[in-house]
Amino acid sequence: MAEVAAETERLRLRTWDAEDLDEFIRHTNTEGVMRWLGGVRSREWHEAAFGRIERYQREFGHTFWIVERKSDGALLGFCGLKRVNSDGAPNPGDFEVGWRLREDAWGQGYAKEAAIASLDLAFGKFGAPHVVALTVNQNEASQGLMKRLSMTRRPDMDFQSKDLPPEINPTIVYRIEAQEWPAARAAALR
Image (cartoon, rainbow, N blue to C red; front, side, top):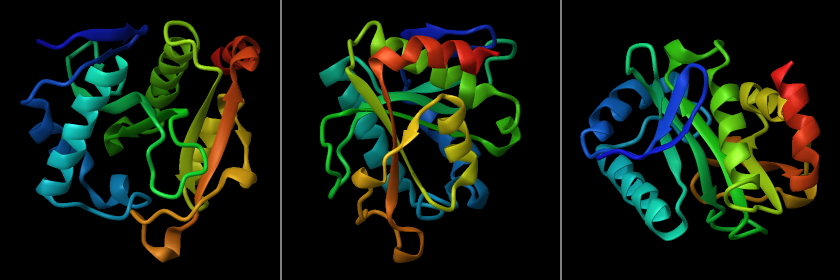
């Protein structure tokens, strides 16, 4: 049974059910969604990722939760919190906010709405001192959201990811401190 981590005006962030994986793959394992994540991946890759997502929830009480639209129950993708575990990252264990939404959900403010709820949990419920977000230079849309969340670009934390092809490396890092979040949250909601 899925557990609701957060609700917003339009969205529900909840834990995964086993049957979510097929729908998640169908909607998000596309050229457009996976463009800056190393390309379309195999079912085995997604199953391994699902295993990690479940483990994060068990070990830390948070994960990249399913983002579900409340009006119709549609699975839009995921958003939430994990701990940095990328090989080569200079900050293992830091709280990381991340999102991946299906293409027909882009441009409607869903990622921002879900990210704000996730950051509220990071700084409130989980007491994170800071939160990072990871992307690549070419992913201007994700960087745009990081900036709208008042996250600061941290080139000193960039790293080469073994999970990504050379043409989109390095992984770049944005960060926000707990004490910055109240004003950043207010600005993001305007």
